[in-house]
Structure formats: C-alpha cells, structure tokens
Amino acid sequence: MPNLLIADIGGTKIAAALADLDGGVKHQLQVKSAVRDPESMFESLCMSFYELLNQEGASPRDIKVIGLGVPGKVNPEKGIAIYQNNLPWRNFPLASRLKEVFPKAEVIMDNDVYLAAYGEWQARNLNEETFVYFTVSTGISSCIIHKGEFIRGAGMAGEVGLTILENDQSIRTLESLASGPAIEAEARRLLKDPVITTKQLMDSQDSQSVSLIQKSAKHIAQGLHQIFSIVDPHVIVMGGGVIHNQPAFLELIQAELKALVQNPVHEGIFDRIQMSKHKGEAGLQGALYLALMHNRKNTIA
Image (cartoon, rainbow, N blue to C red; front, side):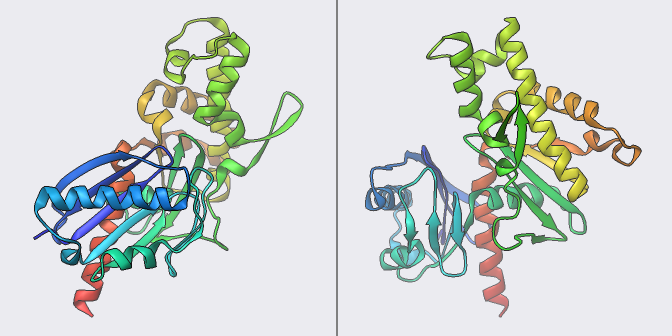
C-alpha cells in the first residue's frame, strides 16, 4: 500500500504524486493552482491528493508521510507557509490543516527551491562537497548544500535573485532583470510585441532579440560569479523553466561567465556548472527524498 503523498506547489500548478515507502511512485498528476484565496489554494492541494488516492483505491488514513515543497518563506519546523509571492497564503498553518484531513500522516515541508536542490544533490551522491542549485524561472533563487546540510543562514540564504546589479545606470535586482517574466516584459517593450514569449525570443535571430538575450545571460553570469566568489562550490546545477526549455541559453551564460573571470583563482569555474538531471521533476523528487528520509529516521528511532 502506498503510504507517501508528495507535492511541489507552485503559483501556476501543483505537481503531486503517491508513492510507497521504498520510493516507488505509483501515480502522478498535475492540477492548476487555485490562487483566488487561501482556502481555494488549500482545496486545490487536497483535491490533487484525493485524486491520487482514488486512483489507488486508498483512503486518507493510509497515508503515513506527506512531503511538500512550498515557494517563498516557510517555517519547516512549525509547518507554516509564511509568505509566498505567487500564492495567497500568509502565515498559513499548512501542516496542521493537512493533519485534519490525513490524521495519521506526518507533514514535512520546506521551500520549493531547497527541495529541488535536494533532489539534484541526491542524484549526484555529493556527500562531502559544497553544492549549489541555481534556478531561473518565474523568479531567480538558489540553495546551498554543504556536506549534506542546507546552509540557511538566518533563514533567507541563497536568495541570489534579490542581489543588486547596475543596469543602464539604474539599480535593479537580478530577478527583475533576468527572470522569465522580466525577459518577456523587456522583449515586449523593446519589440513592441505584446504576446512574444521567451521561447520565441530565444529562437529569434533579430538583432534586438539577440542583444536582449545576451544581456540577460550576462546578468545571470554576474549572479553566478558572486556565488563562486563567496561560496566557491564544487558544483552548481542550473534549473528552472527558462534553463530547461532553452539549453542553448546555458551555453551563453557560461560564455559570459568566462568573460567575467579576471583573477586566476577563478579559472575553470564555468566547467563546474551542470544542467539539471531531474529538470521539472526536481522539486517533486526532492519532496520524495525528504519524506523517505524522515520515515527512515523515525523507523530507526
């Protein structure tokens, strides 16, 4: 009997799965996130879980562990979704609310980028190294894992998208310059095309499009250079929809990073950059690993 429910919760969709205690995924689905209000969002999560249970002929009382990746700021110990830019939850007691529906389940949750990082870290067996996951998607963020432990700082470590860059004599955050929505917004302004997508922009050979993409790649390379200078990780894995869907963009980023190297100690850092193995499944895989690890610890105890 499958005993694990896992979900990677986003502002657009929820990816959810039902798995057994050996990590075997039995059923998987995606549902649209209902972001109208906190209760609608919670209901969309529950409905995704109900559908998975129905496919297996299982009940909520069969679930032993629920693993969740939640965007934004979360309190993993208390199970609270504190603040999410793309969701209507504010200090939402997610774990306790799920316990009302799944009375025998322990609810384990963390930030979605942290869980995507955990999924990629697990896939590489990097037990002693310093590892960074860097995502370029709706937002830009990163997560640091050192010798198997998250580096959280006071709670917001890794928010590279909030770092400040200079751009055409203005002061902007990396996220406001090079995230997926930022790239699209700038393209629509410059090209006067209100519906152009990032993919169309990347495929275009128009000189303005090429220049815009090159500039975005340079901004991301600057963010990577900051991480290499401060953290000096053995590996940086690039993830997020902008990277997954446009692999050639990563080559541009690596070329821009190479151009930024001014000191011999940075020689070769661009060779430490890897593409995500799990791609869009990284967050879900991380949630699965987290739930399995928690269950095994409890079983041993």
